[in-house]
Picture: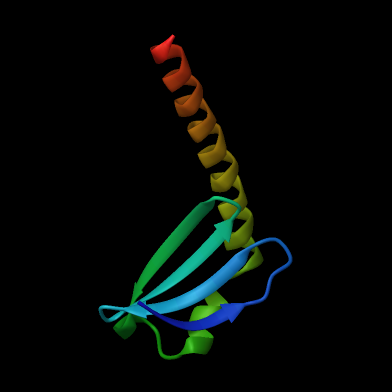
Length: 84
């Protein structure tokens, strides 16, 4: 996987990678990560990819990150109950 670009953001680490004829847009927050895979033939340029990272997309990612954290905390707490 080859890093193509990092997009500066105050909250997230956003990076664009290239792998197996796909672009991967990785959005990271703390220990959690969301990856969007886009075929190279579906976009014209790197600028197209950057335009896809909108405030709406990032807002939706934040909601998923919150849900991911809740899911992880529930799973972790369940593990502790199972071993007691």
